Length: 129
Image (cartoon, helix red, strand yellow):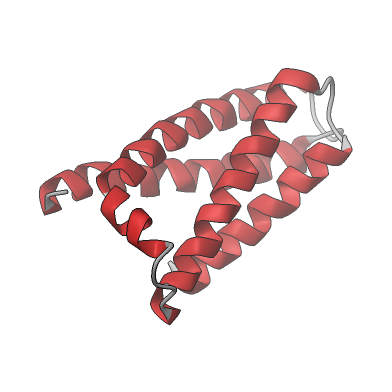
């Protein structure tokens, strides 16, 4: 993938990720402490940012598909953080989809897994990203 195409995908991904962090914290900070409408607004922002991040992430993976294919053949030290980040991304995507599709209400076990996965992914991005 060309450098300019990478920039066109990666910069919006960074912005979407920042919105995900802020809105995810907003959801958990406001849960049970403020009017339901405020919590709902945070949740809507979080879902919109999540879908944006997911779509951009798919384009990012497509753009780097050759690298992902080569990953199975050689496990370099440099690629291990990327593998962990990819697995965290998949975990957050699956748990988020389960929350949207099958879970009614907050404070479910899957919601807590999604929350902790998000915290771990955020810390990981700041440490290794």
